[in-house]
Amino acid sequence: MQTIHIKPPSSGSGPGNGEPSEQGPGKDLFPLLTGVAVAVATIGAVLALTDSASPLRGPFTLFFLLAAPAVAVGAALRGLEPFGRIVTSVAAAVALDLLVAQGMLATHRWSVRGGVVAVTLISSLILLLVLMPVLVRRQRRRTARRRTS
Image (cartoon, rainbow, N blue to C red; front, side, top):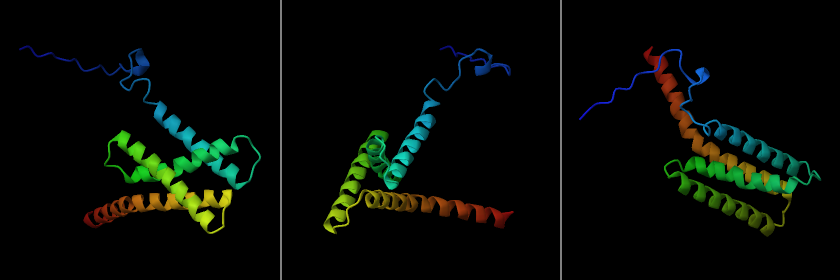
């Protein structure tokens, strides 16, 4: 059997010198789409809370009401495969929205602003509970390093 030797690239080679990059065309697209999704969700929440008469209020607010809990639940489901994580987090977001609406209707406190605030608070609480152990571990490592140095 013959071994194929791969010559390492010279120091002057790379994407800036006419050679193709190792990342590919879709690698830079994910952060851009994430930023757009965050902006749309934020605009939707602001439009709902300010009671704006914009035609974008409905779709953007709906996007916020689905995206905020889905991201929070998705962060908690790190162990699942990507497709299962997406399906589960979207289903949990719909269930959370329905529970908030049902609770507000049962207590005769229904309002769009109240629903957006409730979903925001619950999603933030879920995300905080998921990120708290990570932050505590990071703080312990930092403290342990200071003691050993």
